[in-house]
Structures are given as C-alpha cells and as structure tokens.
Length: 215
Image 1 (cartoon, rainbow, N blue to C red):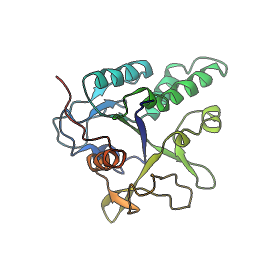
Image 2: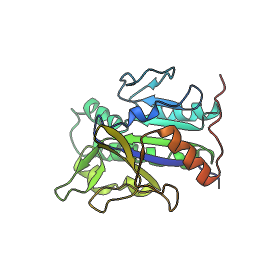
Image 3: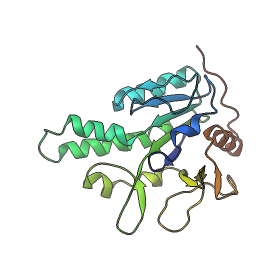
C-alpha cells in the first residue's frame, strides 16, 4: 500500500524551525502557516494561512493534487491551542476528546498521501519534571493519552550552539526524542536546512526529487 511519511520537527521558539525552509524555491514546498506569522527570511514562497484542522487537511490534499511533494505544517500546536481558545467557554471534557482526535488526525494524514510525499509537522516542545520532551499540547488528556512521536520514524530536534543552528538527528539519551532510521543521517548534528534534509530522506527511501508544482 502506497503511503507518504510524516517528519516531526521540534524545538523551542527561535531555534530555527521555520528558518530551515529558507532554501526551498517556489513549487518545491507548500507551507501551511498556522500561526499566520511572516516567514523569518526573504523568499518568494507564499504560505497558506489557516488555524482550522479541516481547512489545513483540505489544503494538504489540494497541494498534493497540484504535484507538491513536500508540505509543511507550521506550527501544529497552534491548531490545538486556537481550537482550545475557540471552545474555552464549553464545559466538560468532551472538548478535550475532540482536540485529541483532531491533533492525532494530523499524524494519520501522511499515510493517506502518495508514497513520494513528505509531510513535515513542526511543533514547539514541552518538558516534564524529569526532562523528557514531547510536542507541546493542551490538556492532561491529550498529553497523557497520545504518544504522537511514536507514529513517526523521523524526529529532528533544533539545536543552537555558538550562534550556529542545527538539527539533532539522534537521541542524546537524556530525554529528547530525536530519531532517524539507521544510516539516514550519520552525524548527530546537521545544518538546519530542511531542503537538504528533504533530499536526504528522498534518497534514502528512493522517492526521487521534489519536482515542481503545477500552477
């Protein structure tokens, strides 16, 4: 059965998640901009702005039909937090069940896509008392019941050292959830260039290049 893959990109604000898109050219990537913020670099890329799950998922399918092979959701936790704020006056726990289901659906989306599509899910992180990191979510139900990082084979963690920005490709064993398939990335730290990452993933799985989208 053909299916696309999800890649989780996590890190604190200002550590290079969105900036990693800087080397993509128009037609090579589609960006769904949940936070509706300007891109932090000069570019001809034009993100699609929405903070609604259904609209975002329809946008992904629309980009696929146009031939886009690499699609970015930036940042996915805002889909959840914005839904929470819209429903803040609702009583009871039903809204948390809905939020968990909607959030989980993002990680079930890639397997419905063609097998040369890569869906990049960017997220801030949160840490528990022991220092273990997870994608940031809202509510105890979501945090305790979902282990979405287990649904992806690749999790890249932003890392900044001496003014240089990297992705961490393997877990340090100290609570972070960085991971990648055996032999995909040899160094523990690579440049935070998502276009280069995309090329490496496609070469590893035999997906081929990103190609250009149809107008």
